[in-house]
Amino acid sequence: MTDVLLCVGNSMMGDDGAGPLLAEKCRAVPPGDWRVFDGGSVPENEIAAIRALHPVRLLIVDATDMGLNPGEIRIVDPDDIAEMFMMTTHNMPLNYLIDQLRDDVGEVIFLGIQPDIVGFYYPMTAAIARAVETVYRRLADWRGNGGFEAL
Image 1 (cartoon, rainbow, N blue to C red):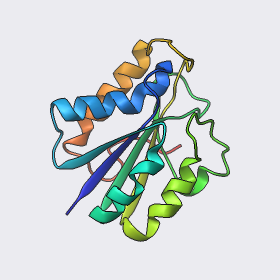
Image 2 (image 1 turned 60 degrees about the horizontal axis):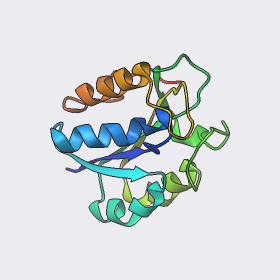
Image 3 (image 1 turned 90 degrees about the vertical axis):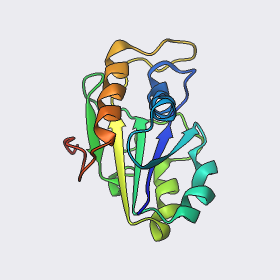
Image 4 (image 1 turned 45 degrees about the horizontal axis):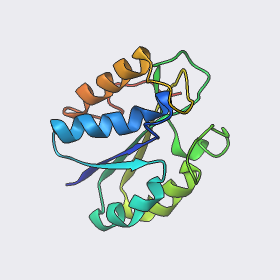
């Protein structure tokens, strides 16, 4: 049984570095049996490696503008990502990546962290660093939606 965590974002763009920070924490002290990929700003580069694992569950974590307060965390239905026109700093919309993986992954969960400041060379805000820590702590015992509300 394989679970995959795909962390997405650009650590040089303030709060958009939430995903890479989570990947870094997971590499330092692995939370359970997750296979962790730091997709950075080009997560589509990880499609082949993830597909080869045929994971039971794929959890994608990214800073996502959902119109919430900074640091709020929500589960977003992957089917809604394209319709929501979510702001992204990535080369390709995440719904494309998800569509590429659907046949090889049992379940796809998209977890968004509401950013505050996304801009080159800005530091990550405290609210987003706390949100990353919350996600990290829940990974080891993840069940269902990890205890996070749906958007």
